Length: 595
Image (cartoon, rainbow, N blue to C red):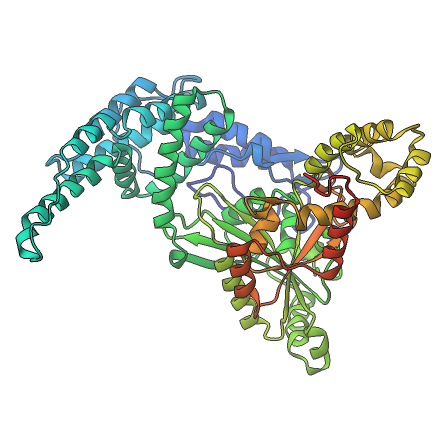
């Protein structure tokens, strides 16, 4: 047992981010762990406890060999603020579990905001604002929540001043047809409007603008908004405070939306040669089909795959959007083919070596030749891209239509014969919707199954009447027990596919598709093309949609028209089969309307 060819990449913005290579995949675990931990602790002496914690979550021992596994999202290591540290004179230090002083943060905040509208130099303001950011980073979770509530209240718009200024609004009187005669009144009104505009802008808007000027400041504001969203999600704050916090969040979202316009986003392809830090973040953002380890991640950025990210100049190492694409000759019906299929992977143990061997290079060449060969031109007409989109909603901007067009353009430049584009998408709200309708069906308010389907269900489950049958189904859908039965999946396939079609096509919220994923694709001009049974057998897929997934196809020449019709009229373009099943479900219900 010996260590050979260990390469590590230590980033100042991430603790314990490494990539390992070995000829025989055998490591002396104790020595590796000690070596890495020692190096990190020597570089970051103030964070020895965090380093130990991160390393313990990152390393896992198998029964026979060593494997480097990625931590789940909940155990994502702490990323230090990119903001420069304050001078040594700072009074805040780490002391046990106390990460900072809330009162110190409030005092620094007041000191910084007091310079708003004064003749203070920008250097002085930047120094004070930087100290506020530093103190905030030192706070614990509960202290951060209290600090955010303090900011949203104390730095909100001064409503008394607004009311007083409104009383002083000049009256514009038209004295004659001559514009010159009214110039004084117009100028007075415009000066008043400027004052009103300034006084309506809350002080925390000014503070956010100052923070954005710092190195790493925009990333800090994104983190702040994430904390605000988490706090709003707890529902543990008073109604008045919640309203103030929502207003704070709205102002921050508007600022971020201005800074993250689509023209400022950079498209970048991710490969196995990309920085380790980016690869790890991509693995952590994959929530639908979690990445198990580095081997799994390498497959997802390997042959017959394309992975793209969108970044911003202010956050170059933080993917805002991640797209995974899969190249095949047919529109896939199942995620297992995408995630596990060996046909479209050129990956074995030897590929873990540094560089690529001859077989890998040959495969890459054949891949390029395959795409450009006249022999396979007919097949290339049905090459498909499976797009799995993970959008970070913290910034609060819609990028869907833009990012799809950018990626499609990039792919067509690389593979000119590509002609069909589709997604294989989850249906996150279907089971929740189904459970609520099973309750109504149990009460007799509507009908979800035909008489023959109910008869088969009763015989299979041993229930005596409809009420007992619906009650048993609710229990089975809650635990996914139905999928482990011998005959029940076959009996439920037809009614569930029918109900899913109704949920996707007919259920609306404010005139648009109730399902959030459907709404996203339809807004971007996609066609609801095919619903797939047993497409996602993962626990998440079964919990959310009984394993059902849907293909949304992008016909590039029709996307703009489809998007316009959906946005303006709520019109959904779907295949005949989906429309037919949705109508069957609608006609089956007693009240002709499933909610």
